[in-house]
Every structure is written in C-alpha cells, then in structure tokens.
Image 1: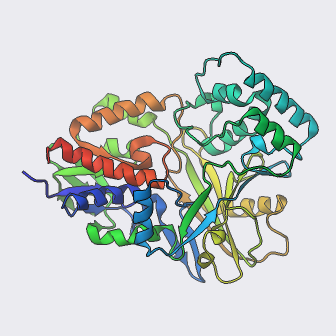
Image 2: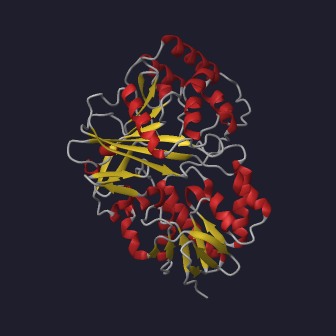
Length: 439
C-alpha cells in the first residue's frame, strides 16, 4: 500500500531535501516548524532600512551538479558568483588563508620554528598513532604551528580543547600542504589559492533563504508548530499549541538531544546517550556601517583569545542588495556551549564588546557611523565532536532506525555538513523511511 501521509519536522535545507524527495515519489508532505518562518538554520531576516542578514554566514559552493542546478533554478539563475576570499587575524597580522602556507611577514623566530617542525614531520618514516584532534594536528603540522593557530581557534570555535575532540569531522577543512608549499609561503608574499572553497554563489536578492522559497509549493507547511511529543507506536505528533497530527512516515531535522526526549517510550540508555551529545551555541552580532570598504574578505578567522568574536563575515560582499547603497555589513560569531562554556550574558550584551574589538583590530574606525545593530542567539550552531560524541550518536541513531524515524541535517545526522550536504541528507532520510515501508 502506498504511503500518502509523510510528516517532516523542520523547514531548513534538510527538511526541504526530504520534501523534494517526497515530491519526486509523488507524495505531498506536511512540514512542521516551530518558527513563524521557513529556513531553519538557513533563515534570512530583512530589517527596516534595507538590511538583510542570514542566520550566520551561508554560501553555496556545492560541487553536486544536480543540487547546484536545482538551487540556481529556484532563484531563476539570479545569483552573485565569487572567487572566495578568506583571511586570518593573529596578533595584529592579517594572514591569507590557510595560514600554514602563508607565513610570510610573521615574526622570524616563529616562522623558523614552524618550518623546522614541518621538516621534521615530513621526514617521519611512519605516522604516529592519532587518538584525538590534538595528536592529529601535531602529526600534521608540528607543535608550534598547531598550538599557535588551529588549537587556539579550536578553543574559540568548539569551546573545548583539541585533545577533547575526535577526528571524524575534519575532512577537507584543514589543508595539509606539501613541504615546498610551506617554504614558498614563508619566503614570498603571494601564494596560490588552495582553500577548500574556491568559489561560491549567493542569491542576488532575499538572502540565502531565497534558495528555498520555491519549495513551498511542493508541501503543506505549518508554521508555529513546535513538537513536544512523538508517539511512534500510534504514529502521532503532539504540538505545543495543543494540536495533534497523525503520520505514516516521519523525517526529522530536530537536534537529537531535543528529539529523543520527545519520543514516548525512549529507553533510559538512549536518553542518556542523547544527553551526552553537545553542540555549540552562538550569538551572532550583525552590524550595518556607513561605508563598504571594511574587510576585503568574505570571512575572517580570529585566533586571539582576547578578541571577543571567533569569525567575521561580510554580507554586503555576498550581495550588494543585502545593504542600503554605499553601506557595508559585518556579522561576528561569538561561540558558547552549555557543556564547556555556558553563555554568561544576554545576546544584546555582546554587541558593544564586538564593536570595541572590531575597532581594536582595525576593522572599524572611530569615525564610522554604525547604522544598524542586532544580536541573535542560535541555540544550535555547530556539532562539538568531543570524545563522547561517536558512541552516543551511534546509540541514538540505532534507536531511531529501530522505531522507523528518519533523521537528517546537521543536527539529525549529527555531522559537520554544509547546506548542500544537508539537502541530500534530507533526500536520503526520506528514501530510507519509504524503503522501510517497501514503497
């Protein structure tokens, strides 16, 4: 018997990936979201005066041609296309990314030590055992570079130490150069671009969520529906607004630590495993400035612990329609986590420290007029791949598989995945639950 009632929890990239797959299977799904808008983690917000900010920086750089073409068609091909410009800030130095092949101009003693250790690493007959991210860094880059750059950034971005992280999330994110690349980047100012994102697209209008808007027509979308209880035996959803809904098949992009406690009959060991999964949360400070020549980079990593924010992006460089004419915009990411660095202030109390440090780093001038200020709190920012995460995730996923609930997206798969991968994750989750029914 064909499935006709598919429920999808969440309207972000993963949720719409599931909806797209359901549409391809001839089913019109019902999508539920606790917010009053679609987009999930890829939502965009338009503020009075012509300011558009996403929920943190999002760009499309997929090499999956099918997804690339689908997203482009959704906005009628009206996108901006760029070669990626990324840099780093460390103790007053602006360093092209990645830093390991752009050491030119840094203190001579530091560069010398880094080069000697890169040589030592490259000459090892066999790689040492690696049990965590810290050991991976030492084995890849040597002690000095690791402790000066990526290990410092880890504390700011992941809110815990490199020794407390596993290595399953790394993928292409950290470039491992050849020895000659390291030397060339230390001796000359100009180097080749080797960032894993060589170019990207961004919608010309409407922010990043514009990619998702046309998908509204393939699903029945119910906003303002926060799930509070899931009964997998009765196949029924209960919402905070007092309504209920039946389903035949269910796909969820809700973060696993929130999803599992909602499920009637979830066993204690699975509840415990879900509780051990941890994510960073972020305060995103968005600023509108009366000039556009702010940072000549799409995003910048800040390594110094005494700089309040971890990363800064420039939405006006993604699309000129994200700001009023002649203006620039900045988004600063400030990371916390309940497990390792609890948020110790109201989101709006992050605004002035961000502005002060942007001035201290030379991004803002004392004479700049700040035309727009806003702070938003993101409860789930990035998965923290601490040493408890893999066994805990396996236990939760095994249980969800057993009861037939599909999971997808960054916080359903519990993976460090980008927007295009989230979309495919949703497609795969939908196909998986349909395959279970033999449909």
